[in-house]
Image (cartoon, rainbow, N blue to C red):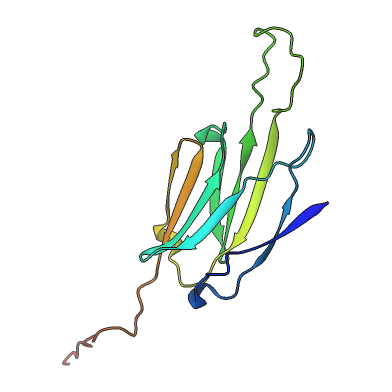
Length: 142
């Protein structure tokens, strides 16, 4: 069974209304292990922080397309017969993938990510508001 979780009620109007998200329970071996994340708006853009403890950076993919970001990868098993006889194994190899919708007011081409201590932080800069300021249009002569 899944728990019903809603986005933070303090989401700005710019992001639209909070989006309900279904997050699977993670209460036993064999349960889906989707990474949990936070998505918030900073003064400069949109920031997503994803918990990925124990995942190698080479096993993480971040793809943006059609105003959504897909975060996927593989959590590899730590089991090794060289370590000894295992009495319990819960951290097995498992693939994961999350697809999160994004507002269209961000620039996916300028996105960047940093992975530090098991937390992936993806930043999407805002598209500058083209209505601000004065833009002088050049006039050519023939």
